[in-house]
Length: 255
Image (cartoon, rainbow, N blue to C red; front, side, top):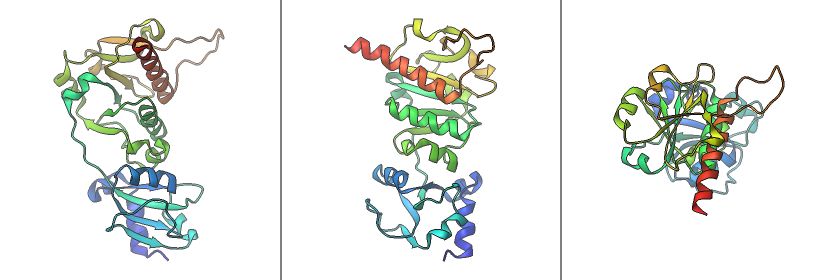
């Protein structure tokens, strides 16, 4: 049985202030746990029914074996997972000079955890190493973000910054693309293989204070001929479409 104190402690990690206090986050399910362990993330606690992992735990991880019926007392999922682990939150240094030579995503006020997790997964798929986030973007260690990332959180470094300070520092040194409705057709724009793609908030888009930093406004054309057509794409889907076109153009150049 899980003790009352452990249940209270594990449930507290679902809240951002306690994640920051204890520097821990939760991941549910052996597949995601394995991805994180294999990527070097440090396990502090792991709750499981059996010690039958296909990965090696660090020596100071506390393994708690209990009945699967106990998992629902600490799980955030509708379907009870086969294991729940609590990892140390890693600390990354943002290397500004490296951003000049690679493609980077900037999330400006993304609020939906599912969207954020999918954006991290998209970045991983397209080989993007860094995502920069404004301070009002959802916490990537929110349990819903971790689950939606499907383990990609282990392979993409995510940084939170004061957005005005960040863009003031890089202004003039790095090309900035802004995804905006009035932007140039994505498929008719010559896209560089390096730069920053700014993805705006789901409802309000890119904040006004960042517009002055945008070097090129781009948009995804709507191909529908219907009168009552969809006005916009989901933020994570739009990010995937934009990243795919960046990679397609630059892969073509290499060939």
